[in-house]
Image (tube, rainbow over all chains, first blue to last red; front, side, top):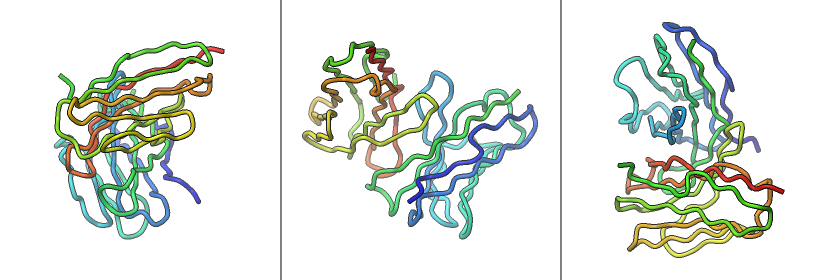
Length: 114
Length: 109
């Protein structure tokens, strides 16, 4: 029973490039959450998605960041025109049905922007 | 001021010692989570609680809703307990967690 999977685990991009981070939730989970952990900072909520729907994106920067969770395939967090300040660990979590269930975390993707 | 404050920031202990990590929060919550993050970054959920006390093995988590305070205790600590312990609260959204900055625990043999 595989857990939440994220790839790549490490991603290096130059300023101005695009970064695509993938998250495959646990089997049977249709709710996905993305969090960002900046250096020396705590985790911060970014976005909550269900299949084909963005439920809450209040934690997403207004520009350059987008997220999707298509009917088939993994959830994608996309960062366009990356800047050095985007360097962080990005974690996704999934849960089986909304809300009160414990969220299961993936191993994270460490993004480094040169 | 962060909505979720943890103390201490860093904690070093000798194997076998009893460990306490504290978490205070300033908002009303529906649930509080304790998470463990190992070097290399993987995050594991330890507890979710909304009242009282929960125990799992050598770990015990307590919460006092009136005082807006929670503690995580580790009995008979072991070097493999070395990790960052993170407190997070759900303020009623039932999905959006607000996190503390974490407590780095190092247990020496």
